[in-house]
Length: 121
Length: 112
Image (tube, rainbow over all chains, first blue to last red; front, side, top):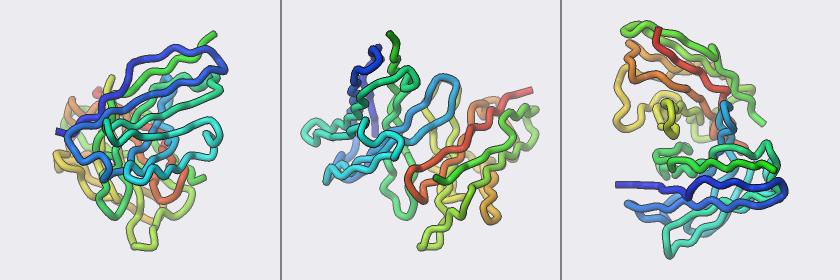
């Protein structure tokens, strides 16, 4: 069965970087896109960007341009999201979500369990 | 950016009664292929979001048929014909027509 397993919670100081991993199993990794979505405490969902797991091409929300880098390692079926220059308002749960790859449309059929990133001095 | 506006933000419902959540987009979500790129997710307490409806009205695999989606222009509606206790949580609409993909604020459904 399809599983997306994310890395554990992180505590970072302002200005630092964090790298969250999302390990996939149960499907052909390179056939899909992976998206990253975050949720600040008590807040709604915010889309950050996607990666084509085959080509490595990426697309980011303008809001995060220059601070976010999404990569993948096909040899271990793992996608990564790195966010730099962390601020207190980056405190959130970060999710990876698989694009179903069913055309038309973009929708997420599987989600990781979420990784809490806390930014605090 | 496309703004998605949901209402109500809080929805107390008696089990067995119907429920309706609205989502309005600030511009058309019509793709050149004729589909509208609007999906619905439910985030149950303490869980990751799960797909309910995609492309306005298509139920995801395993979603009960008491859930349905419809649209009229830039107004979208999620309906639950008979609410059950397991339906509690936060409901989000999201547009995936253009980046950045944007979610509504969320509607919290609770049982009376």
